[in-house]
Image (cartoon, rainbow, N blue to C red; front, top):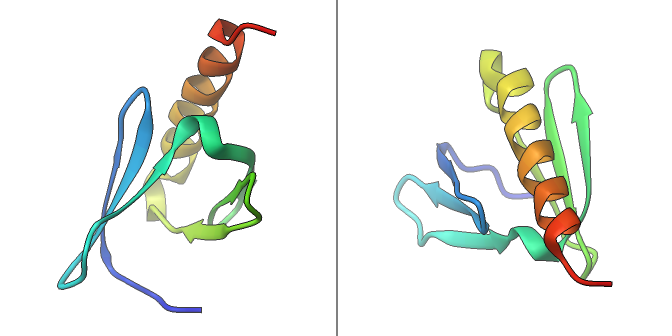
Length: 80
């Protein structure tokens, strides 16, 4: 896969991936199917089977916790 160094911006609706020197990319929270935390990063899996690995370094626990909270708050608010 392609690796980029850059920023990840998490809002209540989306993850904005801002790689240095490349076009920004976004993943909507509602499109996330699964998030997997590992010791060295977090993998995002979307409903369309896209896999994105994010390595926030020492901030991985915080990143995963915020993402988990955002994802499940969104799901709790969604009508059945």
